[in-house]
Structure formats: structure tokens, C-alpha cells
Length: 285
Length: 329
Image 1 (tube, each protein chain N blue to C red):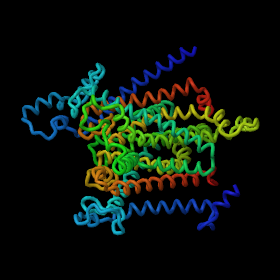
Image 2 (spheres, one colour):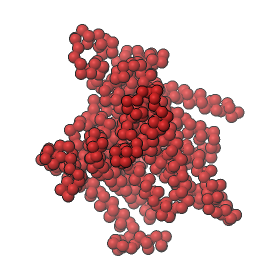
Image 3 (cartoon, chains in turn green, yellow):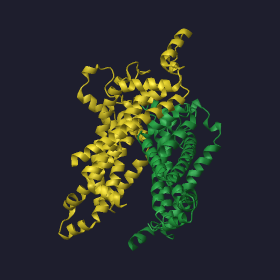
Image 4 (cartoon, chains in turn yellow, brown):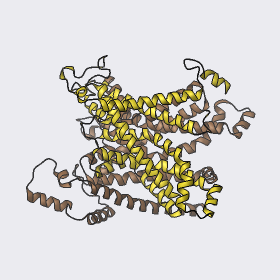
């Protein structure tokens, strides 16, 4: 243990302990992600205007990600695409979390409710996620709503399972039995005794769900479902770039995808670090 | 005794499957029914037709019949084994699905095997050298792979190996402009390599991480300590006590991954224009081919269910230890 600390405490951030460093890294990544979203909303149409004099340029200092076949700057397009993806991912995973809160609590109400919920989980896991999202987005007639609802409806299962297991464990506690003997209703117990224990799970669950939601959103838009081709979503940018691959315009596909990868990794790291900090058993890691 | 138990188990599973299929059919039919798709438009495409013809077609596709009647008609045909006619391929859905699924099965099986073997080896290597540079390298590699969008990896591979190096063809499962009888076995393999590698990458990461964790857990157990005390070292120790304990859970996990495999196949087939079931699903979805889409939903449900069933059988009958562990927690 001591040797690990000694090696960690060298270098530029030597003055801080591991926990402080974890907090710093997490805040840095959060600021980065927020900056992407905020700056993407400020991009005006001028920056995305077509300029045929500078089309299909390889990456340079002026256009760090190059330009596409209409002379639009790929860096700006990628940025606004990432912003859109993050917003859609946020909406989808919030809806998904709410679903798992409701269903998780429902499963704690009684035996029948519990088997209904676990049957629902099995049902939604029985179709491949991607196919389910495609189905739902067709059913809702396409558009961003279709994608958001589709992603939300296909991601609640794992968190519901976690919540269900957690509730089962809490229910064996002494104070639940005492409360029941006092004549409190099941719903009252669920609200007052069980829900507060689950709040950290929900916060964490949403953040852990985020990268999956974004990946699925990008995949579905890449396949051509949901968002219209005018919107600069990452999936659409990448599916457009396919037409120019054989022409050798590698930057059209490389940079947007790499940025998406970095955003997803950032969410992974934030989720893992928050998990460590919220869980006292793992806080020293 | 054992046979009776197995029979009971299988009977229960089959009943469950039938019930699941009924619910999936009703649900997906209902979802598609909600959509503002006009089947007549989907069938004729952009052509203009006479109003009388349109009426005939509307009657044929049952535009004006109520939804539950339409469902019953469809369900009756499905039970008879007739899944309808595909709107985009203009042939029976059963034939389309059969042909496409065969192509996909080749792709999925080869990448499933590849990812299983490669992931297991990487996981064992990382777990054996726990905490060293090799371990860290494999772990970082897996983290990045898990975060990378499958279709982007496919695009990058296409760029490097097909466009720049020209080692592999840009797409399709057979060369263009060659009669199907002249396609050699080698051609098929040649067209399969890149999609297979791309599809297996995702599975490699999850199986490697799992194997690594498990192996570390096993290696810190008491019996491994005893084995070390007896003088066993190195790879022999891992082979005798580690791999045997880790292999079965890893294989189970691999079977549980059928759903992800199918989703990955959809994306990979799309990028490499590989004529499999995933590409058909996307085409059916984009061009509103409802009968084909519903058939693909059914076949994918069966596919995922069979993976879960095999994993369950491993749980119940091959490895009693897993069941015991579950009961304790």
C-alpha cells in the first residue's frame, strides 16, 4: 500500500492525495463535457455555412478536423453533433432511471408485482437492444423523440435489477419489520425507509447508463433511423462519411468517431470515480 | 433421475418460449401498427398508380381492416409457417430470412469463436500477470474497445485495410460480377475476414475483463495457496487450478452475449454491405417492410433465447457450483 502511494505522489500533482486527484480528474472531465454541450448550443449557422472553395480539405491549423464536401468545418460539425448526442443521451437515461425507480419500488410491493417486474425485465432482454430501438423508433414515426424513447425503453433493465436486489437486501433489516409491526403501509415503507437508501444507486446508475445510451443513439442514427439527415448528429456524420471513404477522405470518419470515443471514455471514468467516492468501502482505492 | 429432471426443465423452458413468442409477436405487431407507415406506399415505392389499383392494393394489404383482425390473420398464417411476402425483396419472407440468416450465422459464429478464444487468452494472460505492465496494457485496451462505437471501428478498419492497404475487398460477401457458381470458397473467406475481426473485437473486451477478474479471484483462493505450497508454479499452476475454474463461467457469459452479438452484426453488416439478416433488418425498417421486420424480430428472439437456454443448462446441469453460489447470496 505504502509503495503504491509513493509512486502515485510523484510528478506534477504531487501535493495532492489520491482522493483529491480523483475529484480533480472527475471535475475536469465534467467541465469538458459541459463545455461541449454549452458551446454546441452557441454555434450559429454561419459556422456551418457551405463554402465550396474550401471543400474536402485535409486537417490543417485552420480546420483541425478538415472540411467536408460542402466546405463545412468538421470540427464545428463534430462539436455540435457531440452536444446533440449528449443531450439525447441525458434525456434517455433520465427517463430510463425514472422507469427503473418506479419498477424497482413496484417490485418491492409484493410477490405478484415482483414477478411481473422480473418478467418485464426478461421480456425486454429477449430482443436485441438495437432491434428494439429500431422497432420503437418506427412505431413512433421516427424523429428525435423516437430515438429517445427507444433508447430509454431498452436501458432500464439492468438498473432495475440492481434496485430490486438492493431492495431485497434492505427489506431484511430490523427497522423494516418494526415499521410494519407498527402498522405502516407498504407504500409508506417503500417511500420513507427504502427510497432514501436508493438515491446514490440512481445517481450512479444514470451516469453509468449514459455511455451506453449515447453509443446506442449514435448506432441507430448511423443506421438511418430517427434524426433527419440535416441534423449534425455524430451517427449521421459518420454514415455520410462512408460515401467518401474510397476517395481517401479519412478525416471525415476518423475525428468525429474519435471524439465520440473520448466522450464515452470520459463518462466511464466519471461514473467509476463517483462510484468509488460514494461507496465508503471502495473510497480508499 | 437426472433425465426426468432434464425433461421437466426443458418442458418448462419450451412453454416459457411459446409464451414469450406470443407476447413478443403481439407487442411488436402493436408497435409497428402505431407507426404512420402506409404499406401501399411502401410496396409501390415512388411510382404513381391509378386509384382503382390503389384500392385493390389497400384491400390486399388490409389497410382498412381493424388492427386486431389484421393481427389474427397474420398470426394464423405465422402458425401455418407462412410469414407473408417481403415488400422490398418481392419474395416469401421465409426464403429471405433463411438465406440471410445463414450468411449472418457464418459471420456471427466465426467471430463468436474468435472473440471467445482470444478474449479468454488475453484474460488469462492479464490475470496471471496481475498488476504488471502486461495486465495494465490489456486492461486499457479492453476499456477503450468497450467504449468504441462498433460501426466506427468497422469504418476505420475499412479505411486502413481495404482502402489504403487494399488487402481486403470493400464490401459484400462475394465478388461483384461473378456468377454465384464461380464464387470460390477462398473468395468467401476473403470477404469474411474483416467483418469477423470487427465484430469479434467487442466480445473480446468483455470476455477478457471477466476472465481476468475471475482468475485473480481464483488465484487468491486457499487451494491455490496449497498448490503453491506443494511447489506448483508458473503456467502449470494456472492450467491445473485456474483455467478449469474460469472456463465454464466464461463460456456461459459468451452464450449470454447473443443479444449483443446480434446488435453488433447489424452494424457491421451495414458498414461492410454484408448481405446478412442485420442488413435486411435495417432495410426492412427504413423501407417499412413490416412482414420482414416482424419475422426478423421473431428469429432474433429465438436466437437470443437459445443462447440464454444453453447458459441455463450449463448453470443447472454442468456446473452445480454456480447454482450453490446463487443460493447463498
